[in-house]
Amino acid sequence: MKILETLGKKIAPKIPIGVLGSGSWATALVKILTDSKMHVHWYVRDPEQAQKIKTTSKNPNYLTTVKFRQKRITVSSNINEVVLRSEWLVIAIPSAYLGDELKLLTQPIKNKIIVSGVKGILPESQLITGEHLHQHYDLPWDNFIVIGGPSHAEEIALERLSYLTLASKNETNALLLKSMTNTKYLQVKVSQDVLGIEYAATLKNIYALAAGIAHGLNYGDNFQSVLLSNSIREMNRFVKKVSNSKRNINQSAYLGDLLVTAYSLFSRNRRFGSMIGRGYTVKGAQMEMNMVAEGYHATEPVYKLNISIGNNSPIIDTVYGILFLNKSPEKSFQKLSKKLT
Image (cartoon, rainbow, N blue to C red):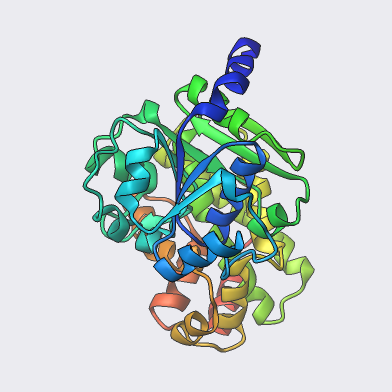
């Protein structure tokens, strides 16, 4: 492993890498890569936003305090141009919009190394990103890496110490990516639990919605602790059903990511849930937020998948009922509270 890490440090800066996406997480990933002395080809869909990044070295819409070194970024509003120039692609487009962006591709991607920073399910296929790319774009699993947390984009911008887990079936690729993220404010681990970590990253957003709803309903810390201890057990049951690999659910990529998403004031899913708990409609909450709450888009497909695999999931069932069946948050949580242990 030390040989691979040493090799990665020598080779990584020369690897052409592209980032697809222009939101807060995409911006944070560009910061990480450029701080690690990588040159990044950056796909920013909106030409006006792309031009402002070129002229100011800042993203005008997200993480606006982050200033990039212009010589380390090449910004384009043409996704195929970025794909053509890149051997590695980091995808950081919200799952709700990723399918439409991928349809713009005229360049093949099955021979690229794809890194997913997406934490949700694509509505078109009802699949997580790795499975979608494998089934619809013939991407080999060896060419896929998923980024797990816990790591909020806002804290990356502030250079507060953060942790990432890189999951891949190809250890060499994971170690190369680790060398590309070599910064003073990151600690990075490598895992082979690709499906487990990607599903956990999706599920934790739904549980963060639940924590937010509870907060909006004025439940206290005592209830939140019980809610989240039940959430991690529910998550564990789910990931065992979809991928029965050896894992420790208490590690940071699972429990840690759940906790930071459920408790942090930076969490858009917690904020979305809190608004629902305070009486906002789904549409009203979506209109007020400037960022996508991935948990909302994941709730329905995860609910249906839970039914198909026969998983016991009272928390996910409760969130689904509130968001998609217009059930009362107050009454739903009263019922849920009696099911928690």
